[in-house]
Every structure is written in structure tokens, then in C-alpha cells.
Length: 366
Image (cartoon, rainbow, N blue to C red; front, side, top):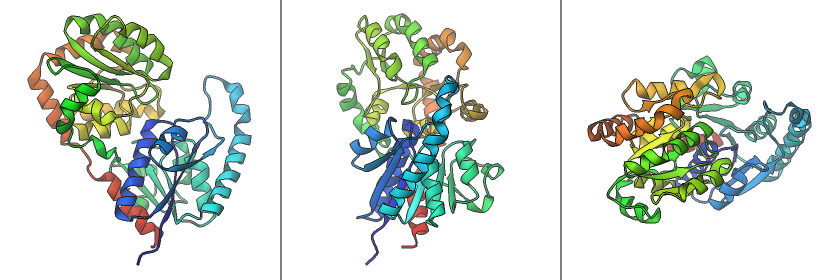
């Protein structure tokens, strides 16, 4: 009889970190029933709500990132880091995990560091083509690094790298069977084209402003909209949508499988997890990469898809003037939609969560 496993998964901050972490947890449970899983996140961030909603326990650290807008906030950062390191150490001493996993985000650093200091096996799941500072620092000390892009030996020790792809929510596969109930869920009809707008779980200002400008055009062309705005733009968008019958506004969409199933076209940023989901969902996509990320890696992500004719890319600085017209053009070109769908589907990395779960279980030695 195999021994019970205890796995600690740390990180969060955005849906791009949280949902892959939950996918990994589910895959571990499928492979080893009875595994005890504990999450560690940052207090005040969305993981403190989303992880319990998925049925898992979570402990919170009082940690945040460097603020580029308000430098005064950074004075409290050293104290927060020290406090978080101590709490992470206490959590690990109490929980006694067999493996500590970091998925990125503020909370992954202290938890991984505490695991390393306690000589517990550690694994990083690096989602991007350009890693964050914390993962670069810890790479030499962890046991394994699961990556989604080739060429990561530029940043990490080559002997620790395992190419797994990025894990996505299991429920976004086999979407065709959900089409009818998804349209009913969003109270949309099956006659027109439906566009899904997702600027990431926290929203994207440029995309939101582009959609705002394009609403009259979309109404004229009978284009239906499922619009995830993020919290900051939600009230504004909700007010705008009152003039239009087929515009459905959400600050956050919890049933993303229904959102993908209901739509014909997706407008999105080009974060690593968003792209992994779009490849699995096989939806024609217009990408507006965020310019405000390290090494401009979203533009690199998006251009790599565009080079394979798997997505359309619009630069952030021209999106407000060009996005609406590009959407209309795509709604009127069925052949292009089918071509984009086929090409993006060919890039999907399937079973990534299972591959990562397998590495975690092997690392435990149980």
C-alpha cells in the first residue's frame, strides 16, 4: 500500500497562476487518491477566494510585489518578506509536505525558500518564456523546473529542466458538446457571432477601452459579446452595456468552459496560460499583448503564434483605433476563422498537468 502524500503548492496573484495550480492539484489527486494538498497564497489576492472555492485549504502570507506606481509602499516590503519567510517556515513545519511546488506569484518565493532550507524536495512550474526574478534566484536550489517553452537553459540549469507545457483547466476540453447550454447560460442566441473578451483575470485597460469604442459597431453588425472587464472597469462597462441587448458584462467569469464554448472568436492578452487555454479551446483569436511585462514576453508569445498563422496580433498602442474593425473583418471571413482554429489547435500541449503531477509524485520518493 502506498504512503499518503502531502503536497504544498504556493503562488498566485492572478488567474494565470491560480488555475494551473488547481489543475496540477487535481491531476495529483487523480494519480494518487487521498493526497493531502495545502495551498499557500498572498493575503488580499484572488487565490484566497478562488482556491477554497475549488475545494482546497489555503494559508495566506502578508506579501506583495514591488510597487512601481507608489514607491512609498516599498518601504514596508523588507518587513513583509521577513514576516512571510517566518510564516512559510512555520506552515511547512506544521504541514510537513513531501514536496513544495511554486507556480509563480508573490507567495511562491517564501514557500519555496522555506522548503529548500528544510531540505524538502522542491519544484518550480515556470509558465513564461522569460522567468521572474524569484524563480531565477531559486533555480539553482530547487530539484526540478517544469517549463513550457524551449530555450529555457538560458535562465535555468539545463539538467533540471522538464518540458511539460502549461497546465490548463480540464473542463475547457471537448467544448462542442457544451455549446447549446453555454449560450443559454449567457442568455445569448445561436444565430450571430459571439466574441469573448478576456483581458486576464484582473482586466486589461486598453482592451476594455477598445471594446467601449467598438460597441456601436458591434451592435450594427449584430455581434454578441461576453466581456470580462476585471473589477476596475466593471461598473463603467455595465453602464455602457445597458444600451445593448447582446452585451454580457462580468468582472470575472467563473465558468470559463462555458465562455469558450459559447464564443466564435476570442480577444485576449498574450499571457502564457491564456495562450495555453486558447490552444486547447481551439478558438480563432485576436491577441493584444500587454507591453507592461518583463522583457516584453507577451509580444514574443503572440508573435510566435502569428508566425504559425495561429492568431492575429494587434499592438497595444493601436488597439483602440484598430481592434473593432479587425473583429468585424474576422466575423465576415469564415475561412480565416477555420484556418486560425485549426492552426492554434495544432499547438496545444495536452496532459501538461498530468506530466507535472508525475514529476511531483516521483520527487516525493513515495
